[in-house]
Image (cartoon, rainbow over all chains, first blue to last red; front, side):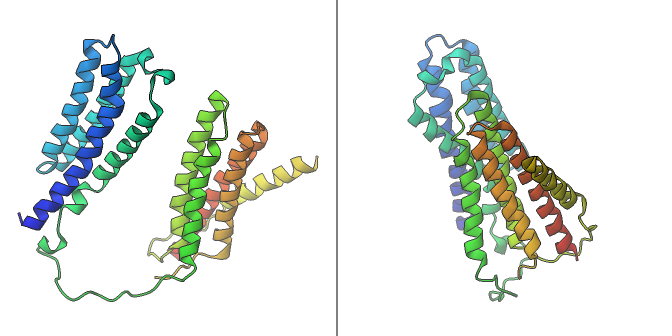
Length: 227
Length: 59
């Protein structure tokens, strides 16, 4: 393995291990150590979660699918099992909000680390089929308006979860968070495709059902508003 | 690469954004029926925009 590839791989593994261990410490190990009556099962599950993370990282280089399976599913599954077994020890008044928020950030970075793991560790030049030549010129340019439009799209996607925080009623608040998250993901997905549309050879029928339902729903709203 | 989605697709996307925002705003009001109406409208608009984008891309 070339030296640069080794460092790329080490950096990618560190990008998973560091936030993973931090998230485990802040959100799994800390509640277990704080709970005076934590059973052996809880301690075993918490230790097993860390073990799964480290085992997954150790296996990821030679067997990426197995390593990812153990490192993600095993780690997350045993962490969830720990939280479930902790039961009433995880009540909100007993949690430190700053540590919890930083732990959530660690979980997010852990997910991002796994998302980019195999891709960043391989150098394109190492591929025997790679054409090593001068940089190819782009075949087209994006219109200038795409930048501001994309920024607006991202702001709208961020605004939806922020709006959901206004909902304070217990049951509805959870629904609002779920709807806001799904809406933000949907907006980003569809909006990005709408803004960066490129022709493809795939043939699809003309869309009528979605637009028809949309118009029908708007007519129904107008009718109810008039009545 | 240039953007070839039409004005209608972008309007549908704008409607979806506004409707989802309106739905979440009304959910805090609380106005459940109004919120439900806007959330469904947002979902339908998003689906219509997605379908239309796929159709335009395939032409």
